[in-house]
Length: 429
Ligand code: DLL
Image (tube, rainbow, N blue to C red; front, top):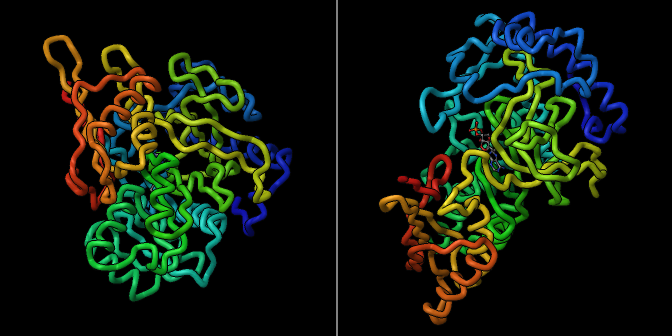
C-alpha cells in the first residue's frame, strides 16, 4: 500500500476515490477483527464491515472520540500485538491520562512518506538543512519531523525545544535553510535573536514549517516578516499519526490533507451531521492505512473548512484552512461566543501591538469577567489611550466583546513559551 513518488498527491480525484474506497474497506475490517472496541461499536450501530464498500458509507459508522482513547487507556485501541510495534508516542490531554499511540514498521514508513510530501510541498529538497525545534520524546512533533527529514535526505539539526540562544547560534553557524517549530516559538526565537544582536531577518532560514498550535494570518505575516522567510503551516495529531496529516505548499492557500492516507469529513459539532462543502465545522478523520492504530471517524475537535478545487501547485488533494478554534475552546463570555483566534485576529490588526497577548477569565458572583492583556510593539510611540480606545471599539464592533479590563503592557512583559504549546487563555471560572 505504499506509494512511491510524489505524484500520488496529484492523482485525478476519481482514482483517488477508488484508492480511498478499497483502503477504507480494509481498515474497517482490520479494526473490526482486531479491536474489540470497534467490534462492539459497529455491532451496536448494526453495521458489519460488509456494509462499508465506499467512503459514502462512512456516515453509517459511529464516531470515535478523545474519551474513547481515555477509556481504552493505554493500548486497548491497538489492532496489533505489542511485538509488532516499533514505536510508541503519547499526547498529553489537558485532563487525565495521556492518549497512547503506537506504530508498526509500516506505519513509521508511511509517516515518513507523508512528512516528505509536506517537505516537498514546502519547496525543500536534499540540499536543505532543517533545524528541528519541536520537542523530542513522547510528543510526535520532534521525531515525526526528524524521521521524515532523514528519509528525505536532508541534514537535520535535532535541537528540540528550548535552549533558544544556542538555537540561534546554531542556526547562524550551521546555516540551516529551514526550521520547524510552533508559531509562538518562532516569534520568541526572532526576539531572542534580536536581543543577541542578530538581525533575525538575516538568519539563513528561508522556510519556516510551523504547526502544532493555532496561528492566524497576521501571526504568520509577523513570522515571515521577522525571520525574512516563507512560513508554511503543518497540521496533525497524535491519534491519527502525528504531524504529517496535512501540510501547506508554497501557494500558501491551505494545507493539503494527504487524503489517500487520512479521509477527512467536516461535521456540525452539535448535530454530528456533515456540513456543506466549504462550510466550517469540526474535522473528522479516518485513517486509511494505519496498522497499529486504525481510527474510524475520529472527532478531532478542530474547527476548519475544506477546499476541493485544484490548488495552484497542481496537487489535487483537498486543502484544509487553518484551524480557527477547537470545539472545546469556544469561550462563552456573558453569553457571547468567541474563539481566542478571533480575538487574536482583531488585536493583530493594530500596528502598535506585538503578537503576544493573554486572555484571563474569572467569575465574580455569577458574572464572567474577561481581562485582556496585550503587549505593545517595540516601535510603538503613539498615544496609548487612543490605541486602547480603538482596540476596545474594534472588539466590541467585530466580536460584541467588551473586556472588563484591557492592559497594554511593555514589550516582552508577557511570559514566552520556549517548549511545548503556548497557553494564551487562562480560564479560572
Ligand atoms: O501537535 C502534531 C504536530 C506536531 C502537528 C508538529 C504539527 C506540527 P498533538 O500534540 O497530538 O499533535 O496535538 C494535536 O494540536 O488536534 C490541534 O488542536 C493542534 N494542532 C496541530 N497542528 C495545528 C495547526 C501535534 N497547524 C492537536 N493549527 C490538534 C492549529 C494545530 N492547531
